Amino acid sequence: MNFRRIFVLYRIPIAIGLIALGFLFGFKVTWWIAWIPFLVSALMITAYFLIGPMTLIQGYMESGDMEGAQKLLATVKYPNFLYKPVRSSYYMLQANFSTMGDDLDLAEAQLRKGLEGGLPEKEYEGTVYLQLGAIAQKKGNTKEAYEHLRKAISIGLPDKDNEATAYLQLSGICIQRRDFRNSKIYFNKAKACKPTNKQVVDQIKEMAGYIARLPG
Image 1 (spheres, rainbow, N blue to C red):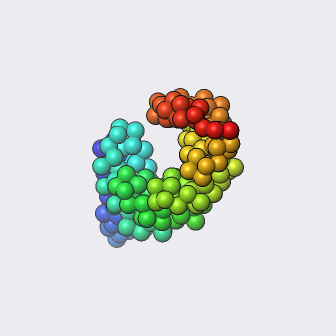
Image 2 (spheres, rainbow, N blue to C red):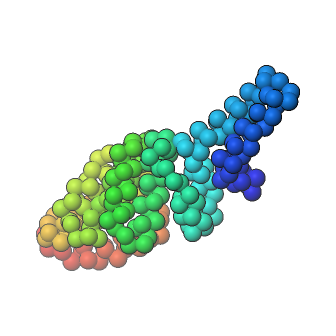
Image 3 (cartoon, one colour):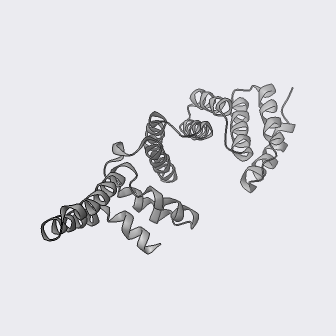
């Protein structure tokens, strides 16, 4: 892991070293050998701009080292050069960190940049709209939140926990609008998802008593 980290984070210095090695081979030995370090250096420079350090991020996320992951993301100097799916993942992760820091405007802007870049699967697009809905709801824009959440469900979400979360948020918005009929419909759909995430399950239990007291 340490070797891989060094290899990824120091691609440019290593590439420069390989270029120098290529010239050394060319002048001292033969140019027929020099093309090998030249080719490897070209591939490393390309990877630096198109992929960046994103291949290391998953390890940090899985180990719970959010600070390390955030520092690694900060090393990306030219995000617009990243390959489109990689760029989308970059902006989604940045948006997650911005949301954790309560910078909702920045998180929203980053999520929209992720959408513009194009996401590899529809479920990821649904997740982005789920996040946009949650942000809009926190900002008090229930109309926009409602639209984003419905779009997230129509596009599709990666698992039943996310789907249940979307239905619960829609139910809550309907309660605010005093649309008790639809609030119950959305709540029942959330229960029908049979989520396994403890936080989502607890939210359903907490909301069940309130829903039972609603008129209609």
